[in-house]
Length: 459
Ligand code: ADP
Image (tube, rainbow, N blue to C red; front, side, top):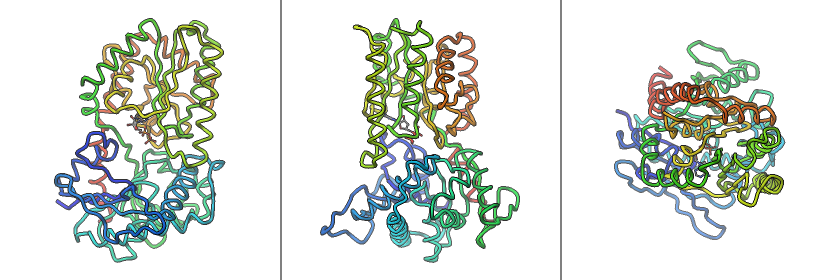
């Protein structure tokens, strides 16, 4: 079995349960193959400090973690600048929030080249390399230029926008050309694959060779959708553990005569949190039966606070929540509980299970794992209802949720009302189908299918 080499912006110890995300997804495969996980250490070297030239190596069971430090200048232009100031907003369809500072691209290239140089020193001839996400699009092109012939796959965790929007990025052609250095390019949803296909046919005269193979820029690559899932079994175990049960009991006790709605997100403008809160206000306005009853708990964890657009969304949300509580609050009831914090991962299943409605209404999202976690956390005999944005990648799979257009505040309020009034029999029926779907397409399925396809791609 080939050794798996994972490359992503950040690296985590797969043995630590708090690691979450990719660590859960790839931990087994890394462990089984004695794999290597390469990325940024999270450390920033300030001007005047010396940086080590070799990657720092650390053992985590059978897995080797290899990390490199970044200089302040590289971190600011590669991570804050190009990755999170250009690619993140544009790939989430927010041209208005992009900061096309011409200086960022040099840092993005430099760090990708630096990663490639350091990684080259650690590679074995029959390694299989899996590169993750928008920070590292040109990594394979850099590796190939240095003579790397190993199989390399890429997975984009965020959406790919339509060609016209992609074309707003000054380096759009360079970015898509760079994807052709991979043997396999994976996207979250079919919509993303369609955007890729349209872009390469229209802008790069690509030939479509069938079986998801595309030829352009003198190279062939395979592009397919691999919708990422969660570890359903692990999440269910977590939901029966002490912390989750305690959280559930506390919530149910506090809200015994009330209806509970929950939102759990990073405080990111892509998550549509202000639109969601406005929909909740509309619910209170148009369906007065919910006053003094329906309570929205919105947990929004701080993220990327040094990027301007994130400070703006925080202010907007604080203003909105304060206004609703002022308008509708009673001495013994506040309609919105907004918590700007990360909650312990172990408590999330309890919160989700206690909520009658899960609100997952991003304006745009590659997949959205909270939607799947909400489903996995429900009591199958009395499940809550998922209200899900049609613009989340998850909507392609989770058709039995109540799908909404988050820009349509009134329509979303109506869907929330439908969710609150949904009879038990319908809730159970929808939940069974959703649960079966996330079970079948869980994170282990995702990993196997990507790696199996990569093993065959390029043959
Ligand atoms: P993104 O990767 O864009 O943040 P996802 O929905 O795909 O969005 O994944 C988010 C993950 O982070 C989920 O596992 C979710 O449980 C967790 N998470 C999100 N917000 C919070 C929060 N406020 N506190 C704790 N965990 C959170």
